[in-house]
Image (cartoon, rainbow, N blue to C red; front, side, top):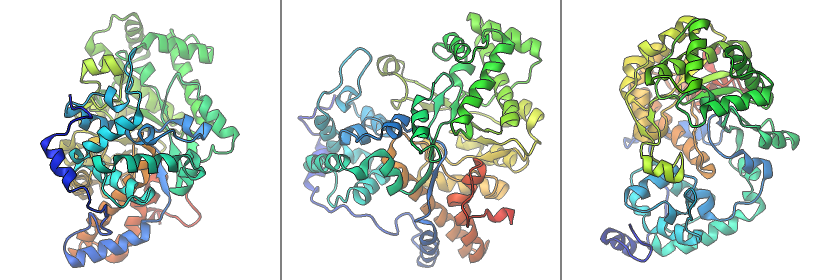
Length: 499
């Protein structure tokens, strides 16, 4: 393990250079070519101050319900961010040292020491999106003008922690400061949404809403699957251990979430496989899963059938459906057993959409009242499958580059492979998918810069004109996401494709 008392040779060299000022190039990520850079710069100026729409994310609703100050820099920036944790863990630093508490154990009791360890090893993030996001946070939000490293760790910790105690850095004030017009959290089907009830009572229900994530009651491999199904029966009064009662309970839970502002459902299944069984077949499969007698193939069949059931329910209640398969979750079994989920040990895997989605699309694919937003961790199917699918079926939209690919390179690969077939208007704009509250403006800024870069290339090549680019960048930055998630348009905004 790397100790807080020692530094690697690389870190020692890094620290000798630590007096360098922290700077952000105003033209960062734009093309190097002067003419293209001018186009990108002009496009960016037109969108950099637009409101932020964050319709898919994992911030804690308790933050916005209680609106209490964050305790310290580590609590807000270090311990919730699985991007940060996974990089440091890969270099032999234990999660306990970083302030993450194991089940039945103890984490570091000194958040300052955890922060110092983070600072000492910050050089590990060079070239990564996290480096861009964090430097943006440090420079633009906290006004830091020297680089973050072992020599400046305490300066950073004290400056950030002191700022967090002020009114301007309470969670609701942060949304105002960042111009976050709308943000969605994500909760499981058994969640009572008590925090959201408080948010609504205190007049913030139009800004902070929930999202219905029913993996806990749709996936037989989910921990506590049967208990979770019994729980939604208790919450709704339906006999959820019967097939008809189970479906009724799901419908009622969806309505419960929608009444608290939800505009979407979210499904993190291992694969995009869908099925469409008869009621008799589905009921038999359901009972096998409840009894724990289902094979791995039958569990996959049940998940697949329930995606189709969710799609049919979306036709009834209007909730937008999101599907993001392709993550082998909790790949590090020992780490999962010690610390639980979302600690940086989820690994992408190959998936296929064309055949897997067909049973669902045969049922709802041509209905313009249904929307399904598709994400992937497998970039190999952007051009091969996802773009052609979204370029044909009226129900499909493509979500932005997600998770491991919400990077400058990932965003360019996405636009390059998708646009020729699906265009811009079969995509759903940008969402940040983050647990790290302060990274939200940095992530949206990066996405807007990369879209400006891509459009500048098209303008310079004569493939679109400047007027087209002006409309497209507005749509990519804010209008398409409003349309995709059925959010109210502003008084002046209008998606150009609908004109």
